[in-house]
Image (tube, rainbow, N blue to C red; front, top):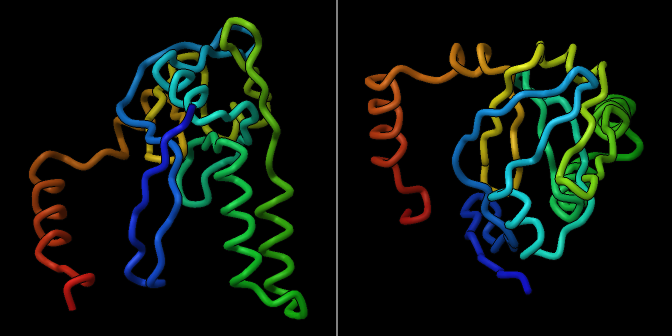
Length: 171
């Protein structure tokens, strides 16, 4: 059984169907072959949503990896394709690069998956990793890298205050 939550997207004036919520951060390690256990809390969320397949991609903006449940990946591809013109060479190049740099991931019976060597290198992962639940996706970071990327407490406080003062959905 899966749950459906709806989030309103005020910019596009529609509701987004979200089946799962990955929350929190969990430290883990990869083995010598590059395998990692997907944290049980995230596996449970996938099972409740009826998701079996995952897609792995390097993040577009950060040096981390992103695990997409297949339905979320398909929605992302559809949204990107919808925003791009098939007859524009740059748009085609963007789409090609976005969809070609992915790896389909399957969990073994123990909940482990293999992070291919090229992805380990892209994200500077040696052994210690951190899984971060990002709502409908899961980020995988090199533990030292993520600690450098997080805001200091006062920066975060200021940023969240500024964001929450603006209410575009109330305009």
